[in-house]
Length: 314
Image (cartoon, rainbow, N blue to C red; front, side, top):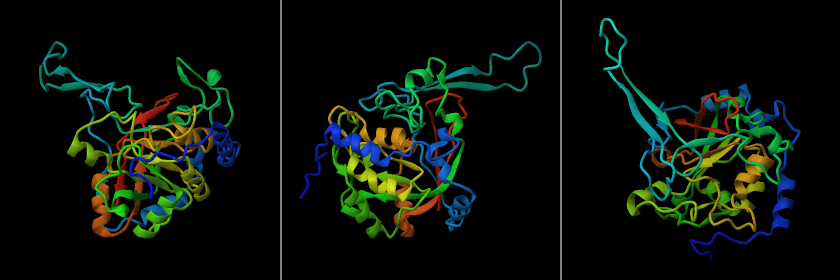
């Protein structure tokens, strides 16, 4: 029986490179910088809409996190730029209140989407273009988040703590292909083409009960041996309450192997730090683990990602 804090088995760089080639989809779609989102057409959207029964709307975005901590090293900014006292000369009515928000959002503190320009492997972005030539100080000329547009598709929640009858997965616990298959059977759901797969590890319940920890050093997530199954199902989006990678990484010399396989090899954007606790409760209450999912990133031309507030509708 595996330890609840087992991130293995270890994977060599040679084995990882072979896996990269196995799941690579370069040259499959146009436009290429939408990657696997090209899988989702009008039929997928209509089928996802048909999943709506109760009309329950569940937001998945975390509150804007302005508090520094071990899992939020670069806090978001929020300050008031007008308290109703900065109106131009003339009549004072109506007074208005304005604020500024900003964030270095890649990390563990903010719910965000990773675009295809976010990850390069051996100097190459998804599709094979040289990252040094395509991403510069002005942003990305390929794979920017502005190229993705909104995604509306079927979402599937893999609630691993519910399946394993524990409150949460412990940091560094790896989720393997066998765990995905067991979750599908236990939850009565099957991952299909064009789906968005969300993993619940129970991270935010653990954080609420035990306090924050350095999730860059240790967090539950997928082992790379789970990726061929997900690739074979033809998913369009991968995400959850972590950043999809088990940490520490089991791969020699690659600190974010699932990021690398999903984004750089498969063209699958990642949804990081989604708070799926309310969604897990809603799914358990209705005994169904698929739903309509909407993810609408900000239209930032050349951006490597975007803060998002995804919405699940049951």
